[in-house]
Image (cartoon, rainbow, N blue to C red; front, top):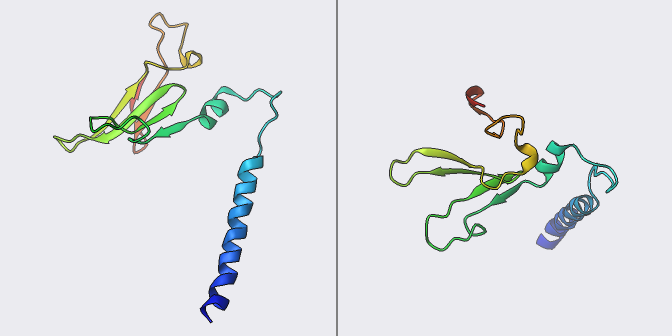
Length: 121
């Protein structure tokens, strides 16, 4: 009795998963290799999340990070103060993001909290 109730749902779920897997494999709206993507599309598609284990967790203070265009953004809770901290590391930034017309060669940034600008450079 249970098999009659469960099996059709399992088959339907398997079909949905297969459809999603097939779509992801063949891609939605992917350009051909001969078509250059705008920089923001290229970097957004290459963005990665590095969990603690992938970042080389060895029991030390390794933190999870989001990487976009070589920029590493760490968001974590400080163990002593319980503050939420956000840290941006620009050591490995993709040079296409650097503003070369600026003598300091900065990376343009706009940081908001709850929609309010807290930093812009």
